Length: 227
Ligand SMILES: [Zn+2]
Ligand SMILES: [Zn+2]
Image (cartoon, rainbow, N blue to C red):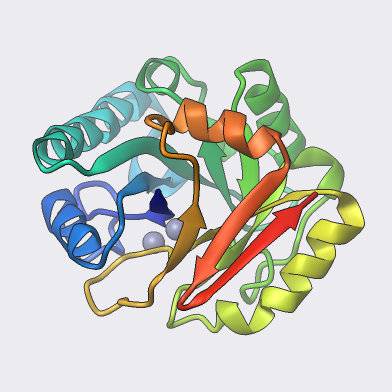
């Protein structure tokens, strides 16, 4: 099964140009079997007292997409991309987060890296630093993450930093993931991961990542990594 584990829709992600339905149609047309909807969870999207309302909206955007995807034989899984500012600005993909867990989660964008990692571990969530070399981002403490991402966003030059990400993962025994960070139909690069066919939810995907062997696909190239 070919999936893009890093996609954004505009109901929640303010930088995305596409609705969740357009996203599903575009990905399906491009030959993907599934995707993980990792909309942004950014502190500036809501005020702390409105956290619960924001999280409800977040879940309903996914549920709307999931229904549309199910009707079309496309596997849309639930995910989150949390942005934190401590110790520095960084984006984190949370795999294995369920809708229920999200609705009762604390205000994660106000956590630091260690607190975020601790939350993920207590809740069976696999924590991946997204595009760890995208300027001005730097890879943070490898002791408090499970993986790092080779990002294929065509506008940020992330693919050129692929070798640095591979070296960082190898040095610190981290799992490698690969996603497009899809925000618009113009981002038509074919990249993502090849995963077993029985992966139906992000909880299954997190279990798969914990095995430490991942297969990524970037255009015609397929590479298997072992942590
Ligand atoms: Zn974005
Ligand atoms: Zn993203």
